[in-house]
Length: 134
Image 1 (cartoon, rainbow, N blue to C red):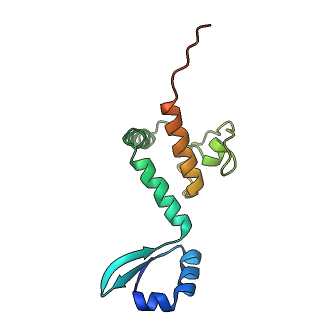
Image 2 (cartoon, rainbow, N blue to C red):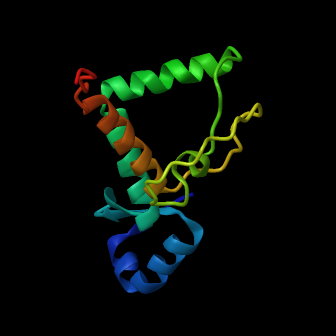
Image 3 (spheres, helix red, strand yellow):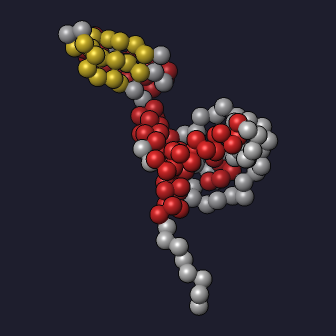
């Protein structure tokens, strides 16, 4: 939900406004002289938005996501939970992924998990090929 408040009202209610934003995971647009000038959102939502923008700004990675989504729509491919791929949030240890036939669970991944997944994919693409000759 997006609320709109004039700057004077936002100043007067800032502490409560911050609590509401964090608790309800909402955005508040601040207006100055009737024009939108700023948006306040929770730190978690901002981090998630940053991770999404980072993923979408990498054309190769974003194209790969689109290809994989089309494959899933055609009944091909596998769906993994982030925790199955990366272990606990923030951990880089990889567990053996569990195969899932069902569609996505609908859970929104945390911002940290999304950033970790994006960085891992970028690192894998940048890693130089290793020679197997001895």
